[in-house]
Length: 473
Image (cartoon, rainbow, N blue to C red; front, side, top):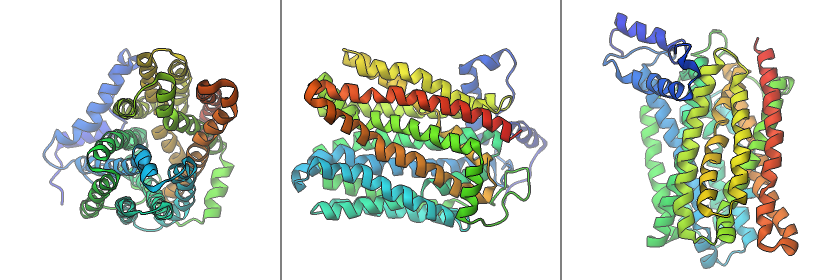
């Protein structure tokens, strides 16, 4: 299937097998040089040679990166469909005569419950069956249910559609994480997973901007149709062009991909790992802060800065989208670079980023100028997004290949239940309690809880980094 590999190709492969190529000692401390070097080695190398350079998974480097691109686009569809309801909810509320509590059930807690609980059995299936097929079916299901949301005539019908979206999206990330880990070796895995995670932020941009435009021009029902139907078509392309990798293909231990494990065995192994326990707690608290800010930022800008909804949507989309994507890639590239010398840096770098994000979150909350506030939010978003690629990479290095999809699902169960399920809810409850005394200022002080919770998350990341070095020594 592949052309003959030349000596030049072998040299390219040899360079790639040791991470992203070498950096000189003097330049290694320069963050900009690291990011540029990582992006050049990671993205350009597949196109330097016309003949197929064989990578660690038995596929060409070009094809391996094609698979990563396709999986990232699947994740983009995931977050477009997830965020679309948020930008459309005021129009939906008016037409279907819904309460704020009902809107909260549609976009928050109910969605999170089905998303996290269904993720575990689907991931269990992914550790035994074809992961490409599971991602295909999941993408098709959540896209179909997104399009179907446009036909909803009452709250119950829309709730059922959102449940379907949640179940479908539950089958997206765990199989994708496992596939990426089988296409990319440990030295490149954090960056690959970070690139995949950038789909979150690209999806937020498209969901906010496209959803707002379609809602204004054509109505909320058409917006659901227009966003859902392309996902169904893309699922066909994904199935036709993406191959299932061999389990454990990039692991040095030949037996890593063998065996089928029960949920009890996986839970026992993860619970026995102090690294995973601390990592799960750290990411859960961090995602609590991320969703607390993300879901309440529009209301904060409206109430505290008097901004219009059209202005908020147009500004928040790029801020969260581009800032988050940059931070996600930077987190993966930096941790892969420094982690080669010190494994603790895989989790220390996200901890350092969270420390910095606290100051910019405070700037967002307490600045009297909306321009300064939004600038701080953009930097905060970039810093907060550095964690996911390294976190999943570390979790996968703690288990054999046959446990990876389920491991991702368990990690996502914890972080989404705490973060998506309780982050926005807790902020709203505190705001309601403070409102009689503080009025409109209640939301500002309710959001300040993220400053405190971020400190706890940072300490847990540092603790996990220390245990990770000891467990993988």
